[in-house]
Amino acid sequence: DKELFEIGYSIQENREAHRTGPTAIRSAANGSRYRMRGLVCSSTQEFLRGIGYICNGASTYPITSGGGAAVMHGSAEGARSSWWVIDADRDPVTGRFELITDLPMAPTPPVDAGIWRFCQ
Image (cartoon, rainbow, N blue to C red; front, top):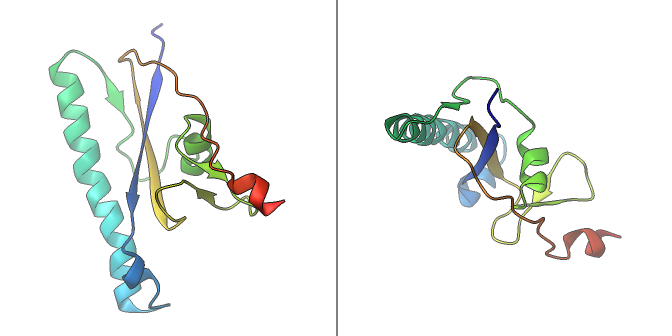
């Protein structure tokens, strides 16, 4: 029984390509963040394995809600619509992903960029 921690990370979709609407360009931009996820995930898993820790999360389906996890580990704030989360550095068109590891990590406080208060 080991204590587990979550590593949350985000990969932003190309904004200009996303704004093209329902086109092949937008579809390619959306797919690119998932291809990048595969590289980030496998590289992180191999690094952690190399230093003696486990790391899970490289599957088609997420371990947790990426947006909910982003709020819980302090990298994003809930938006007025429960479908999106927003962080101070990126727009909501961002893939949020997570990995589970037994590498001990310090907790992070929630972010407060004023987005929720603005939406009230």
